[in-house]
Image 1 (tube, helix red, strand yellow):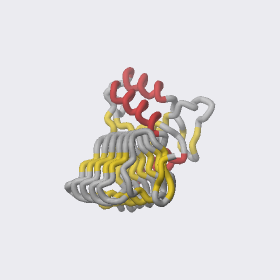
Image 2 (cartoon, rainbow, N blue to C red):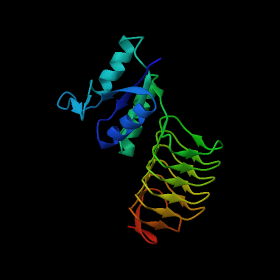
Image 3 (cartoon, one colour):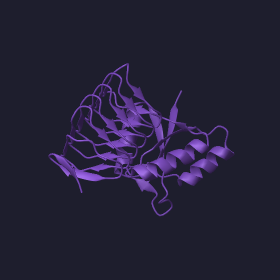
Image 4 (tube, helix red, strand yellow):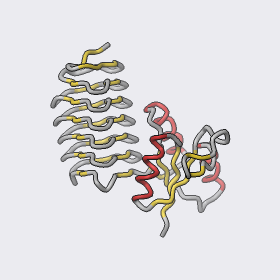
Length: 209
């Protein structure tokens, strides 16, 4: 049976999610709040806004409930996911076929794991997270809801990253480090000390700004 998937967010991130979803056998339909000013993303048609998608579901019992939010901004992604949850959508978790996921890892609904990522034993990934291309999340790590782990990052064992944080491309985080909520770690940083909530840090070693 054909699987249909609504993608909320028609951007570069949305393109990559659509590509992955199609590899996994889904037929995708885009929804973006820029509609009707924006009606296409590459060859994909944008069918309406997020509100239109919710209205369609409420009016049509046969409408697919499957949805993924393809928005890179953590705050906006959280808002859209929670709105869709209130309307009883089925948040899909997408995992690229080349990702390596331990059978003991936990990945919550609405998260996306991209090509070449590794998530090792007893790691825990929260709701609506992005684990981007070739990211490594080692054993016993905990990633909070709506956090983005960017490409080619490496989290050693037991690292904790709070909710709605952003770990920039190529960052390395020492084992057992704790990073708070709403943090921004700059690209190419090395994190060797704990970081509190709501800080921006970068450098090697990373220093709060």
